[in-house]
Length: 443
Picture (tube, rainbow, N blue to C red):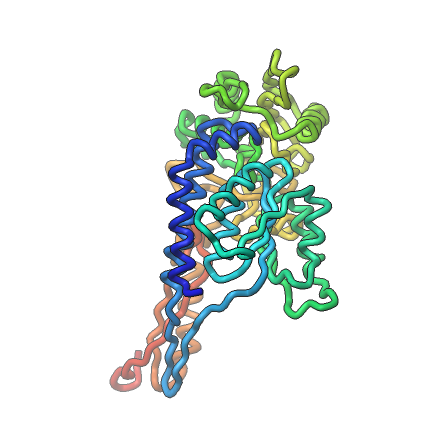
């Protein structure tokens, strides 16, 4: 099938999703306990995935030329094969659709395995694929318990690619299982795994506290903290700690714990009773690891579903489980610091997302990404990482220039620093082009 036709299927899917937007959001509220605002955003993100991947396929479809002197080179892409998509329940349609449509539009067949907690939402996405008349066998729906269905998909010799979003433990098990060749397997399996983290917000000493508190509360307790991107710990300067904590507690106290279908709901239920028991156990254990400064109360909702109110801890040792392990619930740890520094050992332990730089507030390790509230350059960034083209780039430029200009013909070397979306220096990209040597051979 031509790339343009594959892209058109995605555009057709986006059109159907727009028409069924509120129905699909309602199914997420009903099945996953996702509040209306976030459920609607999930469907909107699903539409965006279809539009984005369709347009990217059109852009990448034509072979790209990479010619060199006396050499003609072109780059084209080809499908990898059967793709197993193993999706989570917290973004039941967006992540399932995002991983599936990326594989479909590039010419692969897909087996969609939704989380057992969100099978109905997954089935609704499959209805969309059927409505746009995808050819039979291109998209295949396989609901079931993850511990039973997942290993069969991962180990099957016909599966060429595994796209997974979920916990660190399961993701590492998938990587290990996929690395082992099976009888009848004709290719090396490729694994795309997005796993959990322990995300931090860093509040600098000149931050706007109103903005910082609002951002932390929204990130920590939105969808009851059941997101890998949720703020799980906030790191605050010692001089600002008490004032920030007091405002944070009052803001948290104002949140409304309610059923997900309540339009005023801020914190809804957690996904199931197993998650509820795990989070409550973590809170109980956390009382021996730090000071519980706020414990919300779900009241009569305790008899209606799997509700856990927001909890805030302070004075926690940075090496304690409460400050280092992913909780996936409405539990926030506030850490104070006098000096921040990166931790190399932390990257070895939790180095699952190389674009994120771990932080240390006191002796002990943290993991995950961070957001900083500050009016100036964040104090925790080492000097070489403060700006693309900083001292590190200058040193690399001088070193490469000395190497390349050792003889004729001379080369002019331009360094183009690249930055990730956190604005950190990542790499220097070198480009060399010939130019005439200056007269006299001097510089």
